[in-house]
Image (cartoon, rainbow, N blue to C red):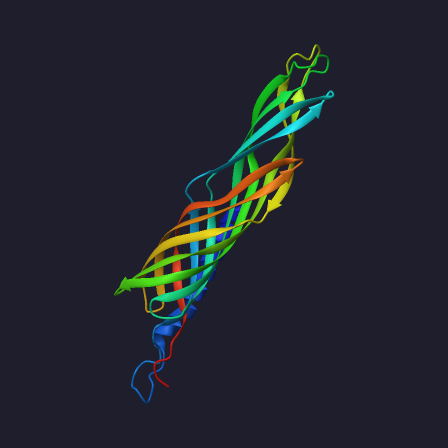
Length: 267
């Protein structure tokens, strides 16, 4: 909790500092030739946002476990929960209606794993014992970089940005290698004792789309709200078990958009 507060404070401080820099765009000198302010349409913009993931992601897999000279199985199912996160982007506007946006987002999430094992009997063939269990708060962090085309619209102080394009994800997940069992003679039943875990990484390619609505506070600073959806999936090999991990999902954002540079009108 303390780390989260520090990150939020740092982000707010950074946003305020950049806002002061952007506000300088409101006081451009007047050209001696044209009599117009030496500024025009937005050329370079910076976006900072607080993000909240809105849904959960699920993935699962089944693999063979060999014990007592006989094959058993372990089915693992994971549900990745919601979490807060952050977003950042820099946008270059090619024209009044079209821009290109390079963005980044990060979320530190947690997953809940549900496990069902069929375990061979130490004394008898074809007499498997079954056990189920759940482990919460498994690590699952994800980040993504996206390069999107932006359609720019709006009226007056209200601005609208519609974006879409490819995204590159980086996911680190804590997964179960084996189930820890509790068993006593005559070994006809087993109890769930947790898991032995490992950390795995996957970097899938997916996509990102978003709709952003903004309201100008000054000539250089706008407050924005955005609905965004990202998606990517990739396979992880876990001791012969293939897990298809999904990243991204729906999210809501609120933040600031700052104009850092404009097209020059006069000289």
